[in-house]
Length: 241
Image 1 (cartoon, rainbow, N blue to C red):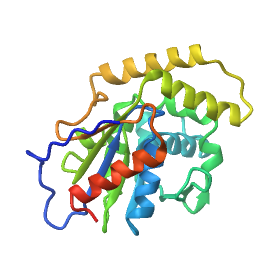
Image 2 (cartoon, rainbow, N blue to C red):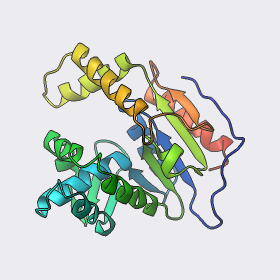
Image 3 (tube, rainbow, N blue to C red):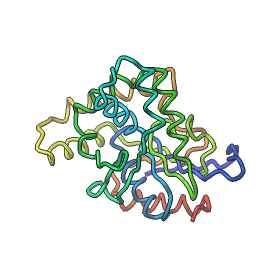
Image 4 (tube, rainbow, N blue to C red):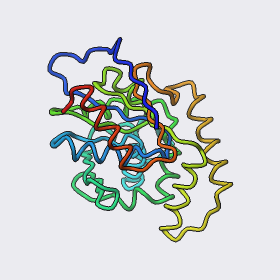
């Protein structure tokens, strides 16, 4: 694990705004583990899984019979959704939408396919940008995503960028699929991850990259306990506890 500290040049939050901890990085690096732990460590802080918002919006549109090709209509649903991320571990995680538990349905591949149909629409991205910022409430917000520290919350009090080797992330994904009884092999998973990384890092809008003032943590080959110990040290260094 490595961490790079660079506190100079932090943009200041406006007076009275809730502090934000932004946790960015590609899939499979442990962002969920860290953000759920932070929500438990910082009692009362809110949590945002920005990637889940696209699934939530797509599923909401599908359930209400909104044409997914009508980006304006889909985007119009975003402000009215009451969304809460609950739970301290992956096992007890609960995503509630308008008071209903949508967790399992959001994890389905079919929901991911719905989300992919709306994610590129500028109207949807603009609506969800504002929706993400709406999560910023006292006493603070822990935001998980790919552009939280570079775009959505550029003035975050602490920016963490997590990474890991493609092979490590593929092994973790293989373990998750096996636990769910889904057959897969390592090599195709590696290629799938490499292709997604390439798209995310080279897209013209909000590419996946560390913010200039981010703390970079490489989780390759280290235990969850070691990762969380490093995050605890960052909380102390940035005077957030």
